[in-house]
Length: 488
Length: 102
Image 1 (cartoon, one colour):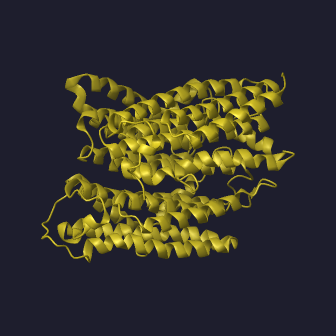
Image 2 (tube, one colour):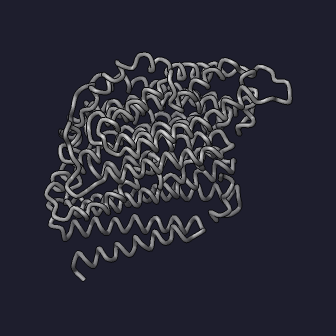
Image 3 (cartoon, chains in turn cyan, blue):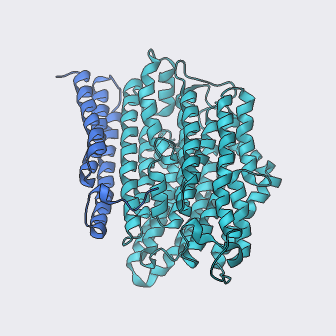
């Protein structure tokens, strides 16, 4: 579709772009500065409204640079929801500097725009630009606490690892362009079907995996995750742990299924002749979840523990990515959706603890069950879900991943590793629960109430874990309708 | 010197030097220089492939222009972060940024 006619399908993004520019202008004028928060939220609501308008359609926009398809739609809802919630929570977070509130909201909207492009780009150039559009504002957001040494350090580590990973990916993309002579992923796909020496693909494939692996924090590209998660402001940590990760999976699925398979996402698709990338992913998945879990055990800081737990969750999601079938993609998409709620509620609890009680390490959480009984009870629900125990949604997510593993009757060793890891994760999640309820506190505790917005966010998000355990069929139906990649 | 191989060799050398710089240097600015080398090696690849690969369009050239722009944006943000670190820690050495570990 030509550039001008594409614009009518591009309204959600256009709303965001105008909101970003308006926020930057309003920030300069002292009397309008306070409206930027409302404007940011309004733009998100408006763009989700326009996003719903063209649900179910598939178009190739801007001369084949990006596409509009149900698959990207699904991820865009996740991004909109996560960003909206984070902007709301950040307003009531005490750690962040009010002075930079408008810049903060504008940067979050820029990241949101980048995430939108990431989930829908089908051209190597667009892929690189969208990943950078997500990364560069994220570096600034991680260092938002300008006078905090930990925040500085987090952003420095983030920028070094991030630009190294994107540099590696870019070199891989350049080799891929040289081999195939095209920057369009379907063009690359058709060139790769008739390639003479499939072994040459391994080099760009691994380099590209470095770029995407850094976004989803897959081992061995995970080094930044714990440091950045610990040092960054907690709302940003919560955001980074869900939204860019979901976008990373969206782009990973789209690129790998389009370029490195024969038959795409349909039933009976196989990998390209001579390129066994599923085995690579299987090994990476096993190492990712094992390393994430083993390192989480010894953590004292709650944010750092949740960082390692998010790495191990990525391992679980990658386990489904080993198989090339629509059901595998469905398992990943379901897991991401459930992970969004359980992870956000756990991080919001960390925001409450650090804001009101100045509690950062697990030992500081002692007596939380008495300080705020309601939120503690819901936190237990989130922890159960993160572990993957019934009756929570985390269990449903894990069941779908394991079902995929047993259906294909391959990689049984991966199933053994995953089950052992689930047991290990029970230990460290429940060290938090133990501190909250069982550990003795020396000083008398008094009840502390959370801010209503934070309180209800935690309650609603944790309650989702029960809801989707009982009633997940509509979600599965919605995901099944969403597994339509453009051009397949 | 007018062949694809020589350009690819230079690109590969730049890439390796960039990786070496990132891995071995302790100074944050030097690390960023290493990253610039990696990005520019990719640029050389893109243009060489476009020039010698018999491509019909100018995709490679366009790609490298975008990469140059994005590299500048990234360098601006990275240097701002390094300056902020210097204000708070008093050093641009990455070994001095060691609060977060475990």
